[in-house]
Image (cartoon, rainbow, N blue to C red; front, side, top):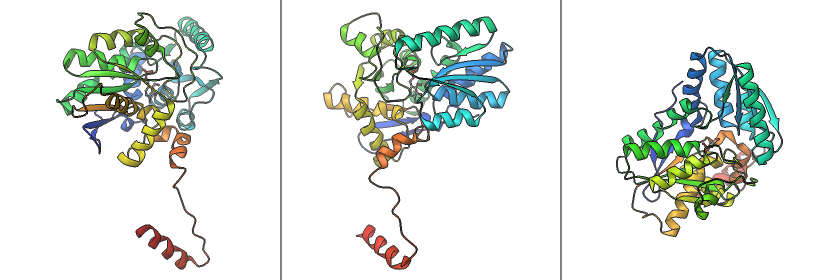
Length: 334
Ligand SMILES: Cc1ncc(COP(=O)(O)O)c(C=O)c1O
């Protein structure tokens, strides 16, 4: 449906560009994954998919399943953002919302175990956007790195948001293969520090956490692709950069107000990491950096409302319309 070949847009300040994965058909990079993985499902003559999702995999799967006549059931956390839920429902998916899914490691692991057993016994496909479950689909995500290098051969740093770690793993592995002079950095919310904890403690294994982050898409409380991501951070010379939810929301406001880019919080997380790295002096601000903007603002209207609270529509009542309107226009121009 036109997934991939997304624009790389120069930022307004500093030597940073934005890779707009939000311009994919359903508004996130997951379309690259689903287009490839669903092809694989169809090649296996399967007609039912079961997916776990924080929202974007589900939105994408629902759209592609509608188009290719595949039935899908999507398991999400009960309070996934409304834009993502609306997309799934609009395309006719069956959606199950489970409290504490993606925040509690026990609940999340129990859901995965049930789905793994069910899909194995029913010859249905289990769709999870991670190398551990769906390596064929995830390999298509590597193209983000290929495109970045083609669009900007001078790229020195790439900042990638991390939830389960698969997205980072795809970009980092490909970058190490084709353009090793660039460093790919993993930006993870402090409230879900799976990769960050292992990195800062020098461990080789990733421990489960109880996630408290409110950044939809980046809450994955146990190791799915996190150890893979950790190995690739180390082999590629990248950093793991923890960011607070407040820093992510501030970066999202910057994207909206300064860059004119409408993105969900996870889509602004790379920028939050870039800002931390520049502030800490761990990257040189004059070296070209790319932030991967993974998801569209329409996905999570509530997060946008928070950024927009001090502006918005001013009412102009019909009585004395001309007078009020003129006063307002003069006020804006002043
Ligand atoms: C918008 C967005 N950004 C980033 C991610 C993180 O990807 P991963 O779980 O592979 O680390 C997700 C995952 O759902 C996402 O939806």
